[in-house]
Length: 133
Image 1: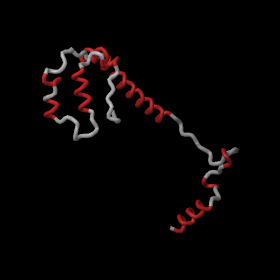
Image 2: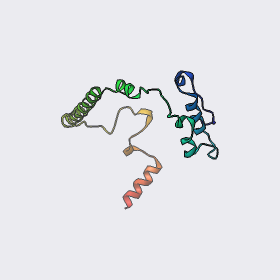
Image 3: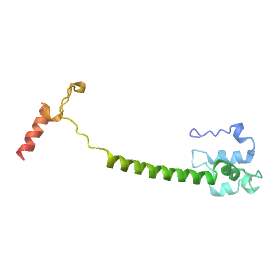
Image 4: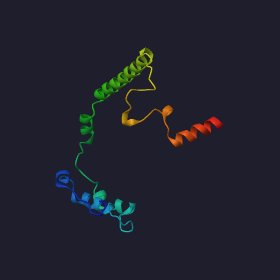
């Protein structure tokens, strides 16, 4: 479509009339000066001849794909999941004992020291500036 070429794969377009394909092809023109305008569309043979006589199965397909009771069940399950998650988070917060995190460890990952023991010059300058204020 971006290249101005409309492709109509047979598997999807087998029951679509040549007039309908022609209309679509004339609507998907990149150059707006040669693309059909509203009046031309209304005068196109496919529109004038009342379009398609094929009965579309869209509504039936949607019903089979989306079953309303299933959607309601999924929504109820989602609500319960949210309630359980909130309750679990509340219980974890209220029953978890506080853990004392040591500042000094026996082994430092990647040979990094905690900020309070760092000798980084930038950190030292920031500390000195903070102390002056």
